[in-house]
Image (cartoon, rainbow, N blue to C red; front, top):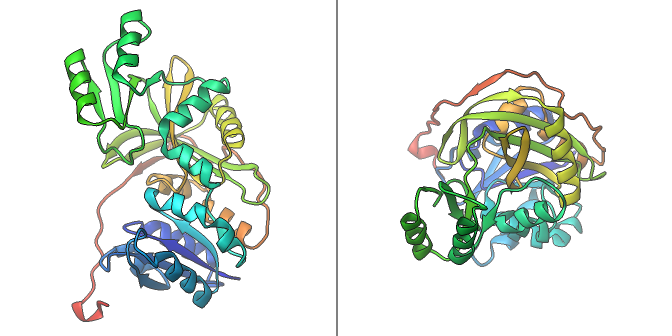
Length: 325
């Protein structure tokens, strides 16, 4: 069995442990990060401290790591790197290396959140009313199509950076004056849900879906949640994932409003709240390992217990200075 390379592992210690557990000592987990004090790299069987992914020569270095370490699967854990990785799909696939990634164009559409909204609207999904200019938002307000409060966020942002609730026209104008890269949306007051969805890298069939109600957020990630099941939502997510062209492990944000489910945005990677899914038996690392080995996964949507809480808490990684690289 080939080894797994996790790029920019950061603080995703638990996820590294999950991959190691699922390999059952039959292969290794190799981790990288550009910072030598990224704690997750020290959970791996072997690690490399690299340059920033935007630096010249970075991808040549990653390719060399793949050659030296007999890598069969690459998993990146940070948003900005995903497009760059997807651009090099053919380069890695020629070496027999699978990527936990959709095609470049789809990764780009996921990060340009207005493209996701447009897809939802054009394909008959419930969608959040969204605008990319002050004038369009003012017209919608004047016509009564939307009202205050509104929600404003970067069109191509990551995490919770730059998001704000807009209570009046003055706040709206001030927000638009700060940046041109924004989206103005109707405010969704309903329950926010996080959906982990796995699309098989061989069959392109949706093989796993896990839904959690978000109870508390911290730094853009789910801090506390409870598992939730609803067949209508499962059907919506399965249809969306297949039609939109998602592949591998993904994190989808959804709002429930008056019995309808509104997809807000898609993170085409492992979400920070995926830990909840794994602990409930929805095993994306195993799915990826199977695909790396040429095995198609059998669809098993919604096979987990409802009403299970996840509560994150702090932990630390300690090492001596002389053990440092």
